[in-house]
Image (tube, rainbow, N blue to C red; front, top):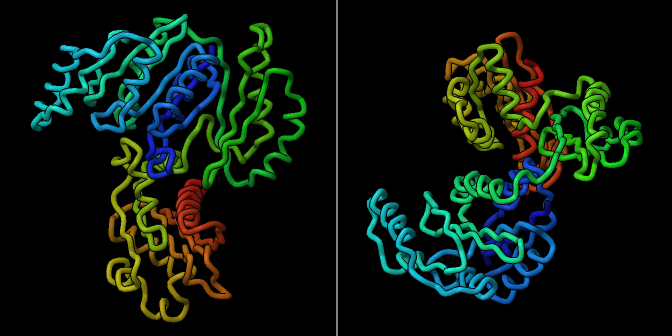
Amino acid sequence: MKLSIVIIGDEILLGRVTDTNSGLISRTFAAKGWQTASVRTVGDSAEAILEAIEASLAESELVITTGGLGPTRDDITKGVLTGIFGGDMVMDDSVTRNIEEIFADRKLKLNELTRMQALVPTSCRVIHNRLGTAPIMWFEKDGRVLVAMPGVPYETRGMLPEVAAAVDERFGAGGTVLHREFTVTGISESALAERLAPFEDGLGDGFKLAYLPNPGEIVLRLDADYGVAEADTSSFEPLCESLKERLGAYLVAEGKLTPAELLLHKLRGWGYTLSTAESCTGGNIAHLVTAIAGCSDVFVGSVVSYSNDVKKGLLGVDAKTLAEYGAVSEPVVRQMALGVRRACGVDCAVATSGIAGPGGGSLDKPVGTVWIAASTPKETVAQRFHFGGDREAVIDRASAQALMLLAGML
């Protein structure tokens, strides 16, 4: 069973907003046996939307669109869909009530433009959007289904389980899918590929190994293809065990774990708490940790010590050390890590100080130089790294490396 995704909106096409909906939709349905045939991104043009939807319907049993359902003049998806599936645009009383309830709950005044979002084609079945005012519309034609969803990621994310359940009811399971993911760290992608070359050479038809690199880690995904016969799937678990054996100590978790998730798991195992002292990463490490629900049992707080005055005043970094070695140095990050442990009363900490760029580098400390310290009740370790890429890349890589350094120590 094939799925095509159409992402609609000038803001996406122009790069003003990052598309997160297509990945979420693809992952959700892949787990149910659907194969994503394509992802198309188009602007708010009737011609472009029509072309993308027609091409998608031609190749897939299921098409999901997001975007273009709002109340403004550039939201034209409804009109295009009415042209494809027929029917008339009418006010749906149940959608009107849903919109009124949402505005009442939020204590907002409902204007006429928003009320007009209850105008939907008679050719669709409405799935009420409990999180927003744009209704989700279900269309069917010639055995194909199109579901038009809102483009707001929060609404798409919240309503997707209900849409997926409706798809299950309509089509049944998409097929048998076997896949396992493994989180690897401490090795480059190229070195990992060399290490796993014999394993990949031995994979039979219908089995595939994918490399999914992220800052600080590589996620390996082993898949049995959609066409693999039922009798051949018995070899899947032995393949997984063989892969784990070849990965050895580089395997840190079965399943996909971010560096922050892995660290929280390790900290909980020891019953330890965590704080961060961040200079060049500017609070990004704390952000990565606090983005994970339930982290409050481990994470206590952070000091973003961007200036030397804060390093000295809040973290207790020695002024003589700063003067002699500079902020980007081993003794400074060590003192930062110990200082934030003391200030926050925690068991463990990470600290960063570096030059994210694009300026500020020197011959002995070029842009991308970052000192990272990790501290536990047993020891404090500091390492120097040099990360390539622009400012954002340096911050992302330093943040991930700090998390993985402490996780490795635990």
